Image (cartoon, rainbow, N blue to C red):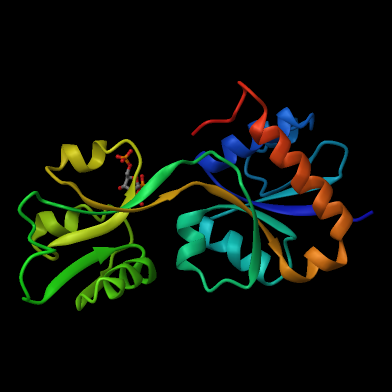
Length: 217
Ligand code: PRP
């Protein structure tokens, strides 16, 4: 049987997913000793792990070259869809928020406002829903810089501990929604390898819910 290919978001989510695989009883020694390798077998070859950047996890699953993916809900919300989201894995918890200086004024008055973000689709949807006409500027990282430099009144970004905001004199002005890691499945594979997918989804779900042992963020 061809192994199921699972694309994992490199970094923090990768570590949590490997811990989850180990809870499921899979031998993950190859991942622990991966060196610079990017495709690694897990367990007895039933699963192959592909290490990728968050947005690329989605691209590989959309195109069907990976069967499943582990990726943050933030990246899913910013994507164009075309896959199934089947499980909330319960780790990688943080939230989307509008943040800025205390006196940002982003929600006050009718003057044109500017928001900086790595997530233009999420930001646009949020402000459109408020009937607010906001200019969105895409920033690639450390978005907190934008209000500090005077580029934007506010940012839309992920907040985990809140330390980055606090240490830069910014605060949450409004929480948008909670975020966590999700398991996604290619739409065709969901039908073509239904039983295998259902089995692995079920076992990943059970492992992530194991009482007292949840793989917390
Ligand atoms: C994320 C996010 C915030 C920070 C929030 O950035 O964009 O900057 O983490 O975390 P905190 O609330 O625990 O301080 P990341 O570390 O991924 O780096 P980036 O800004 O370069 O993308």
